[in-house]
Amino acid sequence: MRTRFSIDLLHPGRVARTWQEWFIGAAGRRRLAFTALGCLLLLLLVFLAGMLPTYRRLSEAQSHIPRLRANLGAAEDDLNVLKANLRTLSAEARRQVPWGDVLETLSQQTPPTLRLQRLEASRVGLPPRPGQPAAPSPPGEGTLRIEAVTPLRPGSSPLLEVAQFMAGLMRDPAVHRRFQLKSWEVTPPASTAPDVAPVLHISVTLAERPL
Image (cartoon, rainbow, N blue to C red; front, side, top):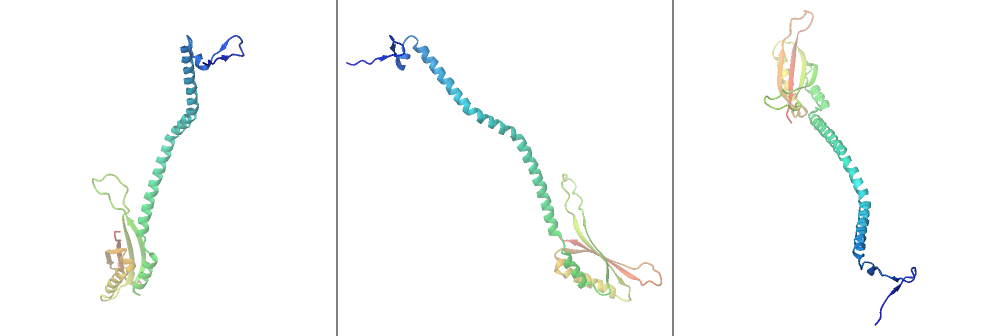
């Protein structure tokens, strides 16, 4: 039979106790409780040391959330304005008249006796419909107004030339796909001086076709 014992060289005359024996005896429970409490405190310190930097970073990130939301709202507003402007520009670009083609058509279809005086493009805003909530105003109706004069001559030749001019103008693809005839008017000459040749005033209004 063998018995193990330990000798405490630092304290002669005393029997050294192992760590198991340190918790045995009358003071063993108290020592065990203190040891458990120390371990818990150590774990708590390690936990806090590991969590505090993360908590601090999380708090800083949360403090930035309102500013980020405000920036996001401002960016969304700017994006909506930009989209609205792009839609308006896109719609306006689709409505643009190829003026080179229109001028070429006018030069080809205008009779020699007919002299153009005014070429005006405008857009008339459409009134809002009653009972509808307030909304951005629609682009309106585009019109092309042509004013010309022709010498007054006996017979129906001036009127026939005006009719041929309008028919040729509306047959041209560059004008027909963009406009439709809205109104036309031939005004007789007012009283003029004897030395001034009387002329007929012709006014043709073309309305833009809906897209």
